[in-house]
Length: 474
Image: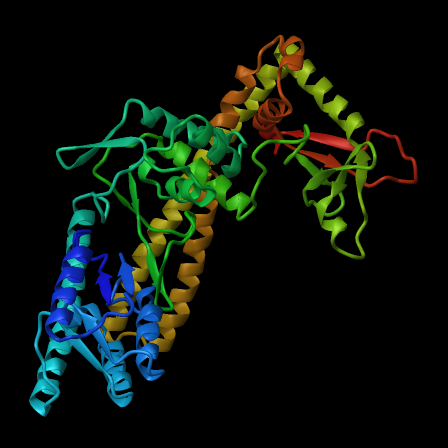
């Protein structure tokens, strides 16, 4: 058996192990019938791809298909105490043996004692390695560095620090801005791959792009992971705790806050790579508020997505051509009307002022809540209040704090939406025919929050039962 631990050994180790095992087998007149290999697999983690391989090898002994398991060192069997002990017991019970090519231990009681001591020492080594790694990670975070020193897209490493890369840095920032403009992760993944910005990997994946943007590294932050149920997990950005990094941010605090706000609003919704119809992601059911999708019937219509798979709901739908033309007319009028543009800019300024007020007020509530929790903890330590009183008061304060924190996130201003009205070309009507459906959809998403479609009053209702809600009025 050959195992290369992802925590320690380099990729030359498999050849070293194989050679030592072959030499030992030749000296002992043992015929090697099969190699079981685990490359880059941990022998100390509870969940590892190595354990099924080990069970497979032991099964060969139990089924009388093999007599002995050969390893380079006993640590290659595994460093977890329970796994090691169970493996020895199963093999011994089946009348087989586990032998090391470099560590001699005979079948006598003294030999078994020596073998057991080696197993305990291997477990100790695994714990020591883990402790060393945890301390190294903690030290890096304290110094404003990521726990591991791997490559980060958008940055280059220089003298142990991360500096914005002049080529990929702007690309990374543009990903955030495009997301704030309404483009989904699927489209961002396609843009990276089609642009050749694979950054040394074969291709970007959807989840890879999500993890990169959620990490907050481009905002100068280091995101923490949490252990839940024995597994290390990464919370969504609106629940995740971030530390300040020592590296220079590529996106502003405002852009990051807007990203987190939109990310929470979108939740786990997965969008298509390209918009197939004009109001993709914009059409909303006026009855239940859910999104509407396009459907050929045989002409294209917008239909309530929830009503399509839920009984007892109004199946709100509308001819797509009619509402598309209304939205295009609204856009062309907006582009050519200076007064409407001025009003949109004024509404955005008011929204920014309102947002700043909410953030100041909510931040003050958070600060006060932290002070109250600290004072409450001191009272508990002094014995001034009981555990029950502390728990009841702390729950109320934490609830207030959570509400204030949610208000801060939701008050974030989307800078892309704020700048969008001024960036619409006045001659957009002339340029419209040159744009693809996807490009038209992206433009509309930056200006329009939603297009509400009211239920038809009767069969064949052709009244203008839609409402266009601009971003600055949402």
